[in-house]
Image (cartoon, rainbow, N blue to C red; front, top):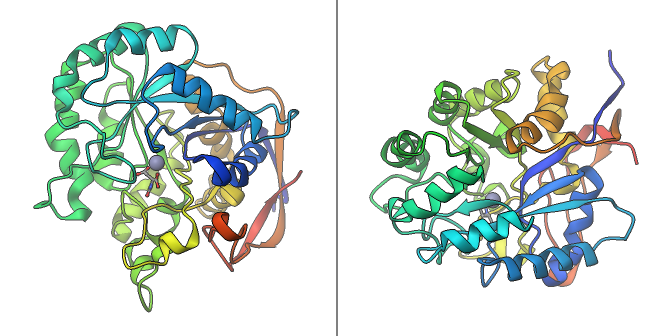
Length: 345
Ligand code: NCD
Ligand code: ZN
């Protein structure tokens, strides 16, 4: 039995680091595990221009010790007013790695999101021309569509057409949760990829209702039926270069989760690699973990692989019930559970 596993230093291709006190509290967890991360721009107000992204990047780096060697990769939050030239300039200046598309009102801080994706054709054409990836929160917001169907309906109504009309646009379908998404990405051209979170590999929708309402198991896209979890797991461990690690770690202070209207988001950053590794071991796919965690994403983004290694060892580790206090008290994914692997510092 393997008791230690060493891989090239991995990246997190989708994370929410927040701002202010929460940023100060959570950034180090991501920087400890990952060399680089794609930073989500859904602050209030959202990060929609390069000046805001540079200022946010500076705040992220200021929240970390100087020697962490962590690189935040910034994203531009697309709105109906997105300007192709400003986005291309931000990309050329090395500020924006990608653009993030939230359908308006799909999730946390998405009120400024896009109401009609195809009305952004000039932006998408420009991104396609310069090779700038489009990261998509793939859910329709139509209130007549069941929340558990919103990802599959997004694929049918929007994504199929988007891939057809922008055949060279690099698209990442973020945090996939369904068999439909796994199948779509697998069958799509090489321009289409997907990130996968630990929670969607580990929980199905029963976790949200397990003996009572469980706000800490609630995120968007919401966890789906067991058959979908199994399909997403199969995709993650398949060895396909189209699937890579993106935690979607999304901390909310405990009171905002344990509330009459609890926020969507699961904070998984402190034990993300341990979570994923548990899944790869259960699926007898330890040999594919490095590709998923450290190679596929970099290749898709056209970035170099990281230098350096990380090691995980087989050792029981109890996940705390709570991390931080006061304004930054967050309940982590796996709270109170014992995991079988631990990242070696
Ligand atoms: C994210 C957040 O809280 O910012 N929440 C979530 O449930 N994943 C937003 C998002 O990525 O949808
Ligand atoms: Zn997210």
